[in-house]
Length: 464
Ligand code: 5GP
Ligand code: SF4
Ligand code: MG
Image (cartoon, rainbow, N blue to C red; front, side, top):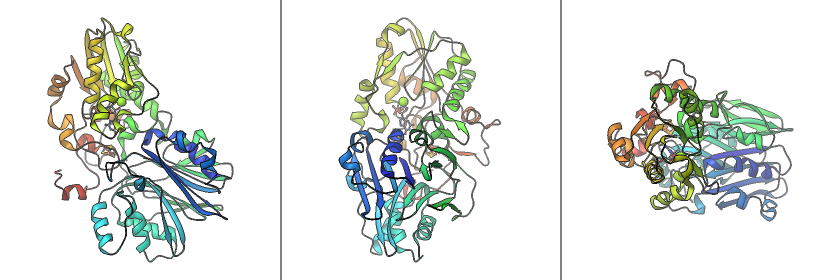
């Protein structure tokens, strides 16, 4: 998901709508905005679909006045599978000291246990979302102000959370102790901004100030930014897959351009798994920077062998298997004139179920390619993510049940190679690779090394 918040500018919700539009790649199912205005109090609007189709209408934006606003774009990882508007964030709660709204990116790994406990004690849940636990925990806290209640609540929550919240007068941002999901701070005029990624600061002309640190909570008012440390200190474990796929290539993470990192992955991949061929083609758009790096390092020409229809969303994010299956053809088409008679290297960011790769291979062979070689910009995805990326159950992951050789056979391609985990670490700037004792990132979907125990899942029978 994507989260965004603004304080201290007129009609803050307009900025939030633009910010969410720039974060649309993080969630396309639905979006929501809450604003606060001294006269009207809190207002909210939550809608299915793209930001541009909802939050551009003047009649709607007029209902969201005020200098303080937060928003969320959703892609469902937890909660019910059939999308319902009740699950769309931000969530709002009314406390003795006034209202508060929160927007959450990530996944709470003990949400089932918390929900059971809260319901037993009388909480009335409105949604299926794991994030709603935070509001109920806040309601039960005995602290006297909302930021302190939020600290209380978040100390009980396990897993990955970047949160943007607002009260009548404050904008609040928090990252979990491991900093699994991103959150950055920016400044626009006299106002302040919180955003999942820097690309959404650019769209409103905000200046990047710094990242919110893992385990940090910032409380922002018209007087400035206060920093708190509500959690026990821990070594950070940022999601390495943000670098590979999730973030936008024009964002900066940890001082590194996501685009540069991705093309560096391609360079590493060309060194680790060279192959003689005529063309390097990306599977657009997610494979493009890595393909550029691969071509640069190997000297094999880069070509747009597959063309993407810009009017389709990300395949993976479509919620059902059937739509996902169609999605590939609706979204991608082979550039026949380029491919015919050629030995082609296809570069993609990841293989999850293998649906995309299989379809693309068929399309490329139909177009008359002589050989097809897959090069993948991440290690085999052999484990599900429980921290906010919607990977399917373990038995649906190709790499969980097959060796690399079996995957190559299953996909029926001439060769298939994934970047090594160490190669990936080098590409994100860790010159000596992965520190096996104390990994610098979360890489659980590749390694099975889960930095936070997925306790709800274990209870349901998941085996580490
Ligand atoms: P598959 O077709 O193998 O199930 O999925 C791989 C494709 O899904 C890749 O092209 C990748 O760009 C895309 N993808 C979209 N979202 C995700 C995600 O959350 N995780 C992973 N691993 N791949 C994703
Ligand atoms: Fe990121 Fe993978 Fe960790 Fe999930 S399991 S947070 S996708 S690195
Ligand atoms: Mg892709």
